[in-house]
Length: 366
Picture 1: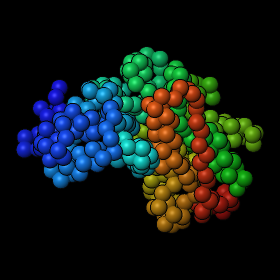
Picture 2 (picture 1 turned 30 degrees about the vertical axis):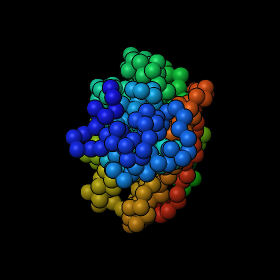
Picture 3 (picture 1 turned 30 degrees about the horizontal axis):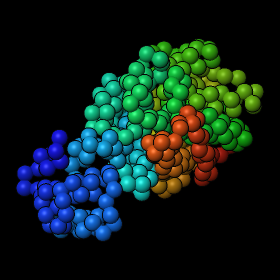
């Protein structure tokens, strides 16, 4: 498709830029399309003319002629989520510094939406894709395998066991273990795990719980394993009643925490693996007339500015969200540039930010 034909009505064409610069149309096309050799002097004249006329390159036409669009595709669960917003910012900052644009699509953890988004990006001729995938089993990754046959693909935030891809994640299991160890060190033994597998019924065994987790997002399963690791290390018996299951909503968290607080041997601490889990848990405590940390200690994932100004300030796990996105972009851009994919898992370290929401469990008078 000739680039002139792709210009919107009223927009200057390559031919007009060439005339303004006093060069041939082919020279202007090579300069504006980013392919072939053009002398520095002529290139400067063409770019000056393009800026003067307000010329905008037709990216699709350029990609069809050169095979390169200088565009990355990004698929995340929800761009409105502060975690993914930070990841996308890291991707965009890194890609922009290397001359690439970014197209971002949200899927809301819906696999059909993810498949559609992948097809859209392929149709847009992006040079590579970064995906925070909702896929779990082998039957759910056909769209990613199809994309891998055409362009480089990098997974971010979630690993998918059935795919041999470069993956950029944080140390979810170790981070969860450290958080629960902190609660145990403060004297807690009845520790609720909030944001567990979306099972229809409460698994009664540890094996059943892990089986449910394996059918869910990789991050959720890793954090559950970290919780269990800490209990094992402290020789604290696993109690399935202390693990939330069911819908992943703030309202469900409030219901489940209320249930844990009503047990004969109730929880004295809560570990929340998502931001919505933190807000749902705090609502349940307030409804029950309990306070944090006097009655119930709490640690959550995804540190933020609001966590630091809460009363009390909340102890949280800080994820390197910007670096997570930046690293994913670096890995993808290196693959696009011709580097052989390492197909490695790149694990970044999180950090536990200690504040005031952890205290020893209440005495008998409470």
